Length: 460
Image 1: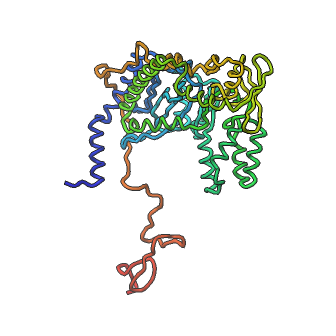
Image 2: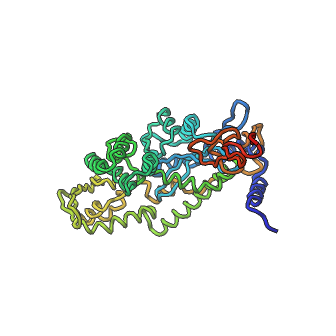
Image 3: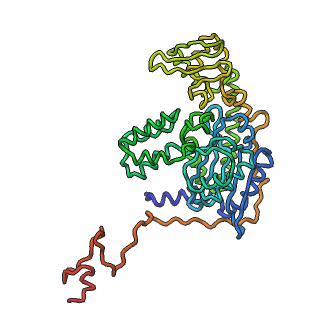
C-alpha cells in the first residue's frame, strides 16, 4: 500500500495528538504541574497567567539551582526567543541561559507566552529576578529585538546589555543589499575586539576607505553595547563571548520540546534539569578522582596558553613584577604582576584564566605551582560540583498522581493554512494587467482584444 507525503504528515500529527492527550486537558493540568515541581524543589520558581476570559496566557519556570549558579558559574547571561512548532500551539518560547565553568549551557529559566513584545519580555525578566537571577553588573547577550531592548531599558535591572556581533554583521548584509566587503564578518569582529580607542578608529578608517556608509553604520551603534575597549566593560569578564550563539544552541536543543503542548514542554525541561544535575555530579566526581583542580575546558585552555609561553622572554622588574615580550613577532610587551595575579593583556581580564605572559613569568620566577590560583573561581572543580551537581539530594520530579486539573480555558487553537503563504493579491477577472505584471494577459481569439476570451466576447 502506497501513501503520499501529505497523508504521512497527517498520520504523524494524529500520533502526536494521541501521545500528548487532549488539547484542553493539557492546559488544565499545567498549573498543578508547575506548583508541584516547585513544592518538591524549593529553589525553583513558577508563574502562571490567565487573560480576562480565564484563558491560559503565559507560564514561567526557573531552574532549582539558580542561586547556586549565580555563586559558582560564569557571570554572563544570554536571552532569546523562538516560536513553538506544534501545529495547534504556535506561541513563543523565551529562554534565559547561563554558562558553567566547563563552558556548557545551563537553562536558568524558560517561559511560554503569546509574543516577544515588551510586556511579555518585562514579565519574563521580572520573574527571572524573583527566581534569584542577579542581573546587576552582569553582561547579558541579546539580539536587537525591539521588545527585549525596550524591556531592558524600562526594567532598570542594572545589567550590561550586549549586542550580538554576528547579528550586527547579518543586519549589515540586509541593510546594504549585499554590497559589502568580501571579509565583512572578519572586519566587524576585528572592530569589535579592538583593545583601545586608537585601534578601533584605525580599523574603522580602513573600512571607510571602501565602504564609508557601513563604517558610519557601525560607529552609530552605542560603543558600550558591543565593543570591548570602553571603560564601562573593559574590566568585565565576557569569558570569550561576543555573540548569542550559546543561547541559540539552547534553542536548537529545545526543538523536540518546542513541538509539544505546554504541559509536556515543561515536563521535558524538568527532566533535563534533573539529568544535567546528575551528569555533572558524576563528571565532577571523576575529575576529582583524576586529580583535576579545574574543569576540562579550563585545563584545555591553560594547556594552549602554556604551549605558547615558551615563545616569550621575561624581563624582571621586582620580585613579582616583570615585562614579557614575544621572541617571534613584534615585541609588544605586557606587564605581569604575579602577586596581583594580573596581566595588561585583555585575555586574563576577559577569560579569567592565566595567559601566556603570566605563565611565562611563573616559569621564570619558579612559581608554576601557583598556576591555578589565577583561575576564576567558576573554573574550579569544587565550585563546579557545588553549583550544578545533584549531591545527595537531586532534583525531584512531580508524580502523576499529585497533578490535578484546574478550571483553566485553553488558548484558541492556531490554524495553519494549506500551502505557501500568499504574498500577492490575486487579480480579479475585470482587472486588466498592469505594465509590470508578470501574469500573461488573456487575449480573445475572435477579436484579438486583451482582457477577455472568446466565451465572453461581445464583438461576435
